[in-house]
Amino acid sequence: MIQINSLTKNYGSFHLNVSFDVCDGEVVAMIGRNGSGKTTTFKALLGLTIADGGQVHINGKDAWHLCHEDKSSIGVVMGDAGFNKVMRLKDIERIMASAYPKWNREHFLGFATKYNLAMDKPLSTFSTGMNVLAKLDMALSIGATTLILDEPTAGLDVVARTKILDILRDFMAEGENHSILISSHISSDLATLADRILLIDQGKIIFETTMNALDESYGVIKFTDQDYATSGFTNEPSLKTPWGTMVLTNDREDIRTKHPDWIIEKTTLDQLMMILVGKEEA
Amino acid sequence: MKTMMLYNLTMLKRNALSYGLSCIFVIVVLMLTVQNGADISDTLFGITVFLLVYLSLLLVTTISLDRYDHGLNQIFLLPLSRKDYVLSKYWMVYGSTIILFLVALSILLFTGESNVDQIMLLVAVSCIAPILCAIQIPIYFKFDLSKARFIAMAVYAVLFLLVFIPMKFLSSIEIDFDVIRSVVTTTPWIPLFMVLTITVIFNLFSMGISFKLIQTIQD
Image (cartoon, each protein chain N blue to C red):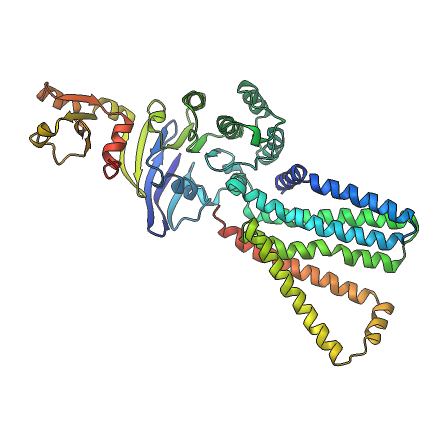
């Protein structure tokens, strides 16, 4: 379980201030534009960057003062960080086996074989997708119950992304106490994986909901510009598009009943992001 | 610590092709010079100094390689402290220096050219790598590779001037160097003790700075 309370970090004009938690058995996805604060949140909660304030607890312990054993229960994949690419997986296997008491060599080798990751070739020869798989292999082989994944699918094609999401689903199915905190700016990746989403923008979580609620209650109403002006929804979150205006609602079925002639669709994460944070770019 | 030593050794192994080639080169030079009648101990000292200087450069370069592609983040995620990471770099220097010292000593003993003075000189010469690394390691923690190289050179230049200017001054006031020379010759343990003391002080000071710097690194 991850609990984050008023985690703050300031870089010049950028101010991060977030609070959220990730319960056991839950996949929480943090979505947002590039530069919205996802990676800063992850680095600050992991102690890789020095936070200006707040508290972070992972599995009930202060995340910035975890003992070595507690660190072993957290698997991390940072999209932009990894071992030096001169290393080979067989080198990394030795290092990880020495560092982690619960290191599962069979799992590591089995995963590498399954996904054709060469043990004796430098990481520099791996494709982007293979590098992510190698990082996931490391994170999954330490016996972790919590995975923290920052942009693991960035730069990957749809086949590789699907493969990685399947691996994460398998991880969740393996233990009731397993949990994942994952970030991505490719929101569609997370629609079928996450239980809950957090939308971060300019260092703040501006929207939070469960995927069930998103699926059952939220919707977008599509208006022509003329209809929008008289719809009575002009104060709701909306986005102007080339064909008209999209309005976000959290009362989809009720509105559908009252206005059967309106075009109302289920909300996708992409639409949600565009309406809530994409306004100034549209 | 074991993990970090394993990590450092792997990084050295994967980046040490040039060092390995240099070792082969100097061994060939050693064999050729000795075969042509050169003094084996002089040749050995020259080669030891070369290898120690080269080794110190190679070891500190691994810090820059660790930082490449935000690699320090990956290292800091391992279940070990940042202090362990710093200490491992210093232990690598000491370990490698001891190995080079023992190899050079074995050659001296094996060739029957050794005496106490030469062994003491070898000990003093072996302090080169720990001193150089003590200067360079904090610089490489603070700056990236491109800047660190220039700053290290600037620091060496300043240190050289700090030694050179007082020496020049002492020679200008006509101090009798023969007296100093005779003290060194009759009691060689005094300069050796001074070199060892300087090495220890430099390294303790360097470790203190490195421990502080590593806590502030945000890769």
